[in-house]
Amino acid sequence: MTKGQVMTTLRTPTQLCDRGLISSDQRAALEAVTARYAVALPPALTKLIDRDDPADPIARQFVPDAAELDHRPEELVDPIGDEAHSPVEGIVHRYPDRVLFKLTHVCAVYCRFCFRREMIGPDKPNALSPQKVARALDYIRTHPEIWEVILTGGDPLILSARRLRAVMKELAAIDHVKVVRIHTRMPVADPERVSPELVRAMKIKGKATYVAVHVNHPRELTPQTRSACARMADAGIPLLSQTVLLAGVNDTSNVMTELMRALVECRIKPYYLHHGDLAPGTAHLRTDIATGQELIRSLRGRISGLCQPTYVLDIPGGHGKSPIGPTYIERVGSNGSAHTVVRDFNGQQHQYPPKAV
Ligand code: SF4
Image (cartoon, rainbow, N blue to C red):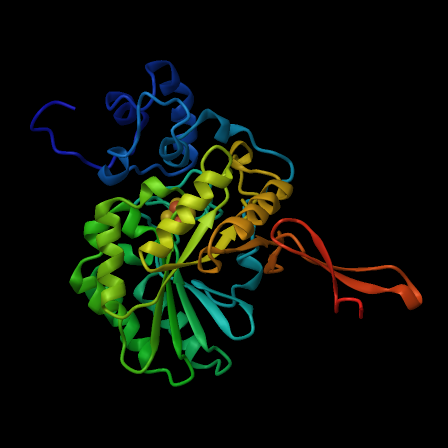
């Protein structure tokens, strides 16, 4: 970039090439990727990429890769089965007491592993019109079993404070909705956008607002991102994290330890570690489940209980999330000798209750 040039969000292979993030040889192959999947690399993340590191974990998450054209038979357009549980457009009602409310299909950054990659992007036709938002709110209003509404997308914090406030006020007026949870990558992608005004719009009288921040690598927690999170925490909004387990990004014990500790230091309680979903063209970023379990085992022995996320898999087909972390307890022996054995953080087994001496 030349002096005086303003940094903008990069959206095309030519822009990525001009900024030295891909080579000119890669450009043609990446035209095919960007024709299919949205690309957006905002300045906050462009600045973080180490161009001298061909395996840079930030680039790996956001710079398109020709490997995205490698679609595996097991991969699914809708890997977690949102469509099967969508009674009206914008709502996913998979679990009895909560719904997803997908207000927008736009994000500030497009993660290369996104499980909704076929549904999101600026050129997708299915952004929610005001009429569709009204229908979605009607659905929530007429289903008293809905205790929690999860705003997701796309990124709900791409909305202006005015639009977000309007939706939050509608939700505040629904008696049976007690909790609104906002899932966002905005503090990482464009921290300045998490302005005091936007934070004020997140809070509604008489309800609890939680924010789940998506963070995958400790380097994403820049001073600006930490300040954005602090603005929410200082406003009394409890913060949770979501992390996607990604090959070459965070699939080592050292990186995961650093990330989980950094989150807690930012007053963000680690919540979910997601196993990579079977989104099309993402095999190069997925690990196997055994790797995830080993990582969780290593965290358990190494760092504070506050830093432990729950490792979960969204079962393909819309069957919901299940915890898939290692088990620490098993039943051994048979009949009269059957007993329970518990494994400690060093891997040693102990009978429970202990044998009487
Ligand atoms: S911010 Fe979330 S919804 Fe948007 S591309 Fe990334 S993972 Fe997908």
